[in-house]
Image 1: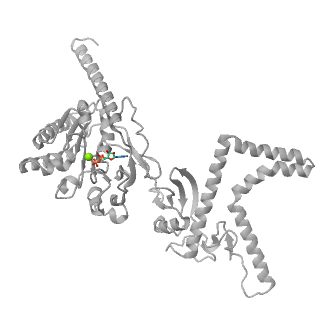
Image 2: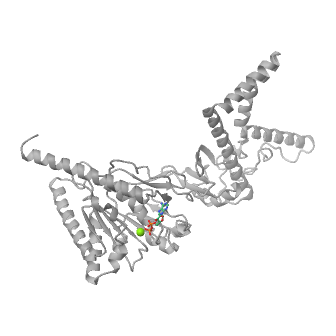
Image 3: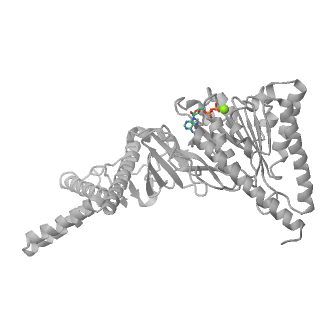
Length: 497
Ligand SMILES: Nc1ncnc2c1ncn2[C@@H]1O[C@H](COP(=O)(O)OP(=O)(O)O)[C@@H](O)[C@H]1O
Ligand SMILES: [Mg+2]
């Protein structure tokens, strides 16, 4: 027998979970979309009337169910008035209902809670209506029936739903229907992300506003006195308004994008973190000379536009890396860990292309080789390389070097091809391209890191006074820590504990 479920999906015992071809499909409205339980057309007259009454009752029941939250609220509010009227104290009942209403509107937390509950109920209704409308229009190839909502979480940019697709459907089908759902909902975008552990579950973002059009809020670590490069670094907010973090140890990062897209600004968040970790050895290579100049007081070594200087710096680092591997071998360790006593090295290169395109051919080739070796072998030795460049195409950066970078961050690019040179081939054709970023939205980009799929985000921005203040703090911290270390060393050498 057919069993009606609310929100218009008809369950047939034999095909309940499939919903395929069940009468009405996803197509029923709150008040009308039935067919379930309707007797066959052979019996005319009274049987048909009975069917209409049944359908009307079913429609009414659906509407009551769909507006259950609102109706329950109304029932609670009017209960004292109704009770009073029944007992012959209408005035007292009215006062009771009035007090409840005043409490609801007048007490801030209660009012906000009620607002959230009503918003969630409305979002659920809209979602189910949209899914049913698509079912009617047979838009998606997927005809899996009801997509149930587990949770609704309001975000600054819209709502995030945790949903379950019905058996017989797949999240991929829901993804295909995303654009059509956005049309029905008349919102900016519907984004679907499958749960990596459960194929039946997905996270659906109903994006109502351009989430990245406004600058990201201040960097949460802007006022920090001391940080650790081993910890995740907050770098921006994603389209759901959620923080995006980057964990650098054992990783290398390549940033690309057109001039003015926000590469150096993004780099500065990572450099600031390293500077505020006094155990980190900072090495700065600045093809533009001015971008990293503010951090020179925190750096162990620096190189400007001269490729030979850059090569000397990298060669020293390589020697250090080889020594580290010997030390790890002696200690039967395979990699540098937070407790191994070996500091992390952060090598920051702004305008990487400068070193690969300028200077003598031999020097350029040496630079490419030293870089390749550091990026290829440096990770376990605690050497992290982060490099920013405009277009990392193969005639600028050898692919043997580019492909070694595990993390990619594409700021605005002029073409999908340019975006793919940063993120890796194939992402643009899957809809992940930094070429569709509005040029006015500086700092918006796509970050490809742990998640496996590029995340669109807007990075935090540190203006010049904030950068200078952090650099001052970091220099003082480093001096203090170095002073303490020296004093401890002198005391040890004199036999004082
Ligand atoms: N995340 C951001 N939020 C707001 N503005 C930004 C952001 N990133 C960069 N900008 C603006 O864009 C300008 C250029 O950024 P920059 O990092 O120098 O670009 P690039 O290094 O890619 O040439 C900055 O001076 C700043 O005004
Ligand atoms: Mg720059």
